[in-house]
Length: 404
Image 1 (tube, one colour):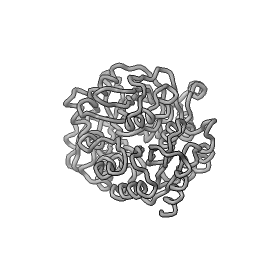
Image 2: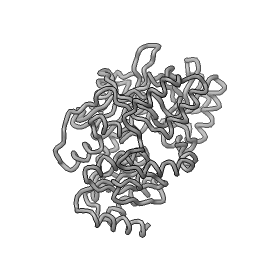
Image 3: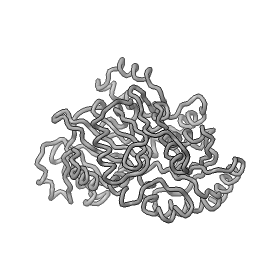
Image 4: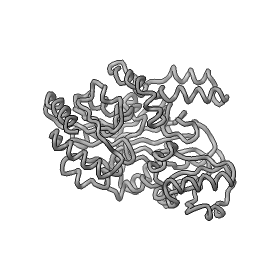
């Protein structure tokens, strides 16, 4: 660790003085932040506990691999030590994972002694972190959600007055995701539901297990509102249709996304964010239910999201806008992404599409058309080619480590 800090400090010393950014997580999401800021001459340090591609970007000033970013206390101590050894006073922290958001939010006061921390306090983040809080607040605000049941175990399943299929998922996503590699499980019968609930309770504790109705529909129904939100309004915003995701049913990440216009989604999202006095970058995920025509809130992510680099092509450069606000630099306000701009992550979109094509769930002509119209690839970029090469080399590692 000391050697890594030393290398980072030397790399930073070769750059002109100025306030930079610490990007916590170096996958393609972190790469988008590094490119956003690096293209404007802003220094970045990538911190990761995995082999990642961002360190190979020509826009990354330095990179440090650390033992653990899942433990909150370890994360905070690592960041403070890095800040001290590399003299990162006043640098802006950019988390890319849920557990890092929680660490920064819960220990915000400690980190503010060294850094700028755009992650909101815990009394705000808790509404996004735990789906039980999210859905409770949504109900209060008149925002539709899927029918949801909290179950303390299989004895409570009799209270579910609906027919399968169901989704069995965690109230706190990261706990379940790291234990299973899945975002949720499908149950097509009552017997399967009982088995799934029993296994989920064993992994994450019965209190965290929730059961939801499974909303029908594919990518056409998957929507999201993305924003840099401050002072009760969107300083920048983007509405998208998440046409494809990996895995197809309960996507851990989007693989093909296109900007759209949807005033209803904007209004619902801003209602939620105003209520919690949100500040920072945020993504709210929805699904439109063809059975009743309602747009139903699924998730709130209090950080950058996987396809945020789409915003840079659409004229809404989210990481830079947040950075500029943190250092009190003038930046445009009231920006909105126009419809029709698309983003793809080929590393996951191609294998996902192959399965869908094999099962007849995707038309190959439509698929090829979508690839031809894609404006942004998540990693491959002419002015920064090495991360793309690195990702190809790391595909076996990524497949084992996180299923891409």
